[in-house]
Amino acid sequence: MIYVFDGTMTGLLSCIFRAFQFKQFDVHVTKDSHAQTGLFDEVVMVPSNDEHANRVWTALKAKVSSSSLRHFYYSFLSEQDAAFNHMFGFALYVFKKNYKVDQDYGHIDVLGISQWAKQVGREKHRMEAFVRFKKCQDGLFLSLVKPDFNVLPIITRHFKQRYQDQTWLIYDEQRKYGIYYDLAQVHHIEMNPHEVDQNIRTGFSQNFSIELDDEEVLYDQLWKDYFNSVNIQARKNLKLHIQYVPKRYWRYMNEKEI
Image (tube, rainbow, N blue to C red; front, side, top):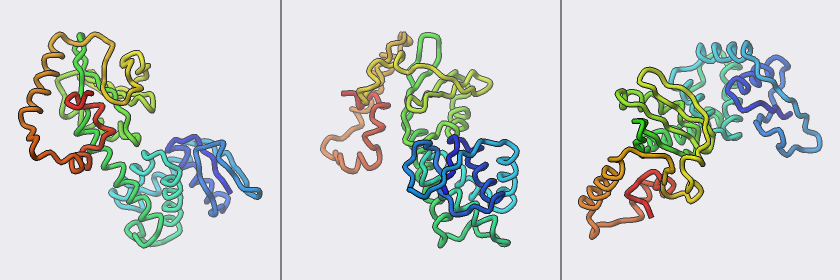
């Protein structure tokens, strides 16, 4: 049986609720309504239901540790069907047992969400390290990003604490939404990133077409000069460098501009 949901956490939790409601446990879950199915597969479109989702989430909180609950959420942010199915299997395993099993890494789904959470957590830390801002004329600090996973919800706290005295916007150009801090609260916004960076398809630099602060070019050059001054060419190890700073992050870094 195949459960198709809308790609939201509410939708996935609704799938778990339905599985127990109808005793359907041999299930594959997917957010792809056009997923390839077998000849004898039964496809069920599972609508998001807030009440059902809240009941499942409350039950999970009572059955697993806070770290396992975080792994569960991080796995969801991967946006991958493989992770969704590990989450589904993990929930079934937890609810079917009368004792705690969320640390049973011998179980494929417990191990699975732990591994997915690790990947998402790694992406979170890299985004926190490599996000670079451009200062606009109105004082807004702007950055366009394209992370592998949907990590904006879990990097919000870091940037809010670190940049409390300035307005900033981090926009995920792939998922088409951003987080904007107005010195008081963080808001979700939508915009067209192609109007901001006309060279967005090159995948290298952020060549913003909007008006930047007059000193932005100066700060940009100062950082490049600093980078060049501390860089020791004789000890250059590109293989090790790419290991710690993968090329897909270079487009955020002005010292990497080509």
